[in-house]
Length: 381
Image 1: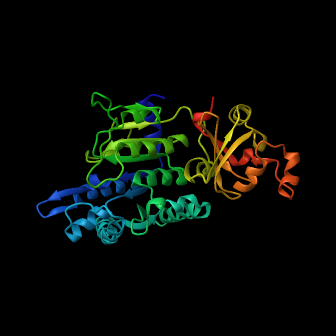
Image 2: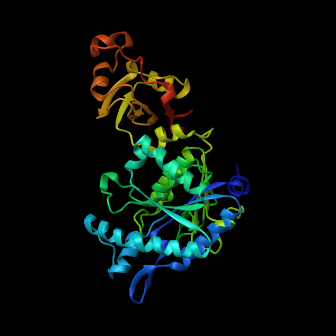
Image 3: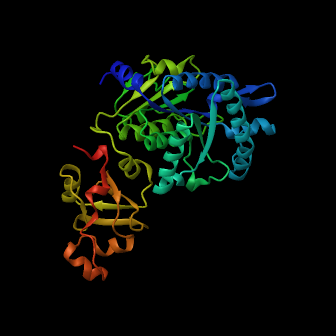
């Protein structure tokens, strides 16, 4: 679908959107040191108010806690060690939300703070609680403001950046669009021209430049990772210039701003459960399958059987998410395992008639039933 059509249909008609604004966009250098660019935040809140008056649901994912904390504490640069980052974020998150609360109140809005870690999305129950909480906030006419919980996050629990937090939130809510606001005009090609439409978010990584701001943690590569997650679910994503006047309201009127991303390879939108299995929960283990099993999964919609498995890696329990790869290492699918890692190591390559003897108990025929398995778009023919 051409860019103009996508903008004039999907974006203009979007009823639920997730907007992410990064630290670099809302930070500025002042004579006294770094601080929040309150003018940018105030402009965004004015636009969000207008969108809400049009009947749209908006979720704001807002970085800036560490930058705000540095300003409050008089630090000239972002700390590098985790303990100091956590402490500074604890100070800065209060300052950031205080400003958002005041600015929103002036516009007749209330805001609600939701702090999350990566593990909140890995667990199915907590994933559903996130969705229910945000949905309830909307029902109460409160603007949800999300941020990573930097005060408790450590490396294995971190998103790494709020771009991925925004993408996972968009998928949890089945939002119509993810809008990533940045200091750039969009995704740039080799001649520094904005790419209007990109229908291959994976290939778009060739345009990623290895740059990162003093306050941000992601850069364009992280944004493209987030874009891929949303497009794989069948939705739309946009990278747009956050300092452009009326950027949000103009985007959702269908104007040609920034870069629009879609994925024609995904022929249908994934439902909420499929999104959690395929794109949200991190796999606890990996299985490699032979050519016959790969064809059965990707072209015939079959369950994953132990007879086609050649290798098992990772430590996982029943019900955990597994990644399925072919013999060349290409990811084909993800699904919920009926077996633990130790059990699967015993039955891989075997027929189901042998399972009870090998395991000492009655067993499932399928390692992953087709109802609990999602083929990734890269594995589709």
